[in-house]
Length: 112
Image (cartoon, rainbow, N blue to C red):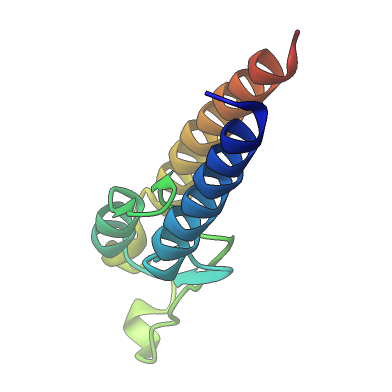
């Protein structure tokens, strides 16, 4: 194959890869901000995948606590949120491991 054809083929391959990447990003379901108040719901959210990135990024996570309005339950904890901090911590550890692996893969690709 001549040099001209090879360069044209490389440019076409690059354009195709860009288009595929853009299409994948159009299907991204990651978030920049997530409010959580239920362990059950957050667990379901953290286990969803993103079609574009694989692991779904939930952005900044804010835990919202509900306050009982009845005086006799003023000191009680909302049962839906028991264990929520631990679950958020688990998600953040899992995401950190994935991001570290991605960084290592990117570094390996850049080495000569």
